Image (cartoon, rainbow, N blue to C red; front, side):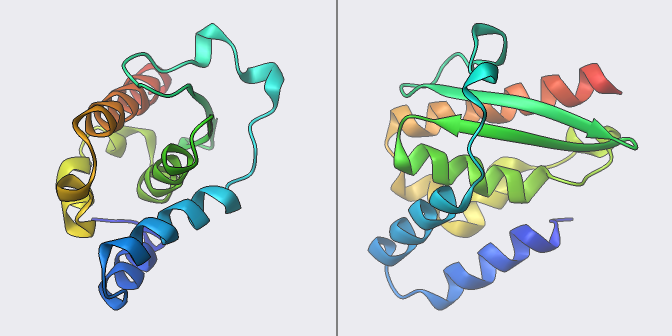
Length: 136
């Protein structure tokens, strides 16, 4: 079950005619993402396996998963925003059950990302799952 925020993104993607418009939308989502305080951009929050610099800082409140993220690449920042929409607000115990690959395939991202970017997304998803598992 996808979150309402992710469903909004999926509906917008359905409305957009071509991949260039969708790509721009992902970048816009990234621009709207609140910045991660540089104090949290440290090795402990860095995601290994991404070609770009990526940091994910978890926030668990009342048993619900949330995170802040940052990247030095605009498209990756947008991908962080998409993952945030997919996972934010879920009970920590439900994070592992999210089929991120299927959700991202719904958006067509699996067909339009380079191999390096796809590997980076997988690394971010793995990191999110690890953070949620550690919190539960």
